[in-house]
Length: 531
Image 1 (cartoon, rainbow, N blue to C red):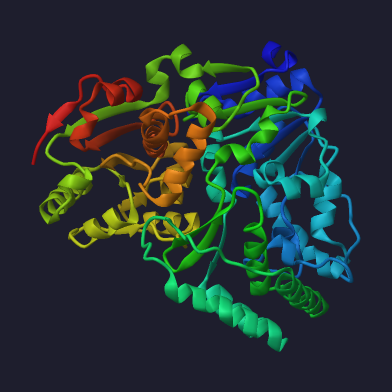
Image 2: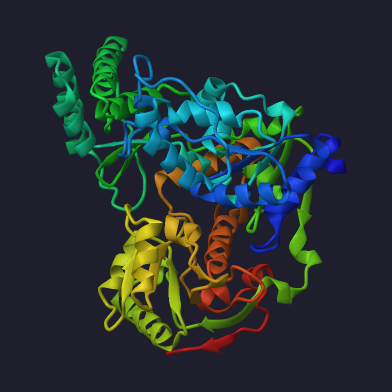
């Protein structure tokens, strides 16, 4: 509290199950009368709602129009929803007495018959709440922050799962594929727009191969103001027609328009990834400037928060910071129990990758699966490694991460029987899954297949250059080891969800037999094995 009152940024490292949510709310509401709780996804609103009720504080939340509009039930962008001319633009007073996801569904069901807008009803009923829950874009996306016009200074800002700020550039990317442009052409009515988009489509046939990583596209994508205006007019026409028909679906012209506009933002670079063109700014600090605003009271917290030096150097935080590590104050038993097993005859080091090594890894995974008490989470460094291993696994029920894999799909699959979950480092299954039953984790074993260092592609090279431009020559630890450590700790955290959980951690890479990794993960004397 004293650090917040002294205008310092507070960084809190505390493990899962330690009570970060309610603790941070109590601290925040002791300093100011209101708190702004920021999470990565809407699914994480529930724990904030629950703890606000425990503290007897009023609660509200914000969701995008795409989630709350009564006329949409597909994956659309909130920008594509044109509210002008909507027949149900009025708002009602909302009582936040049930968990957020259920409330949104309920309001959408009542909206058409009762004649009110769920989105504006939620917004207008939430803004004065003592605890307001929102997602990252409301704070870290400049245009959305300005559009919502929230007064951040009246609240203590709490950024939960703040290790995700390391990926903020990835979250803010814009992407188009051949399918996107083809679908946009089919939505258009103007011939000039169709010709322009057809020319854009030709660019995809000359893309460099980029199956796993991001390859810099050297030739710029030149688009004139007149062409953007042409696309904008087409986009507005489609938006108006959708709301007139009272059915809002994905506006592919809008996806292309936002992508092209993003390329004009300072720091954005163009990459090829798979069959897509991607617009990204490689420097995470460009999105995190709001954390340096001295008048704002801010707490950033996570169970896997990077070290203070990393936050200052990589994220570009320059304001005074108080860093608290709750783990050093807690008994090791309160963090769950882990058995560490180190395989010294395997590695995913590039020079050692071959069919014999993949077969050996597959043998380890099959052995772990058949001896495990429950589900196994296998963390692999890339989709390429995942493909190599899956082809060699037999007699194992495998759930492999794909781009469209959802948490609901995973939960349903796990209930059908013990599974080997193959998750890619920094992917949604490695960091976003919550498989528990009656408060206990449903994952008994975590297999770390190699070390998930950032992929050595053009994007990460440019990211390293951006960091080095601020701090001088960046250390290897800052660029590779700490990001990998965060990913590993997140994967382990999927099995240890509370003090009563226990798990076997399989260190499947000889490079884990190293003092740096031993000291940071806490396995000083692991049991060593070979096949």
